[in-house]
Image 1 (cartoon, rainbow, N blue to C red):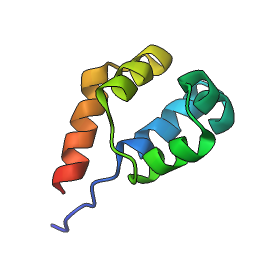
Image 2: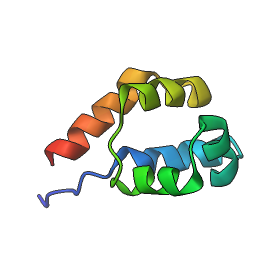
Image 3: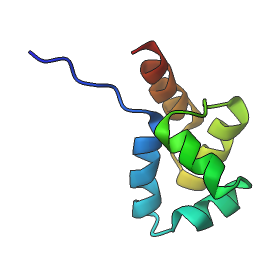
Length: 77
């Protein structure tokens, strides 16, 4: 069985943004972050913070603990 590469939480966030029918620019604005920051987070360059997890929960409806779990898995890989 081949090892699967663990993707950053930002890959899941991209799907959430599409599901919410938002642009990345609009999502970043609602998040209170720049589009550049959002892009860095989605690529795994920017780590998930407690504040960001709470903001993602508020905007996507997915619990902060879900985002934290994805981050832990990504950082451990």
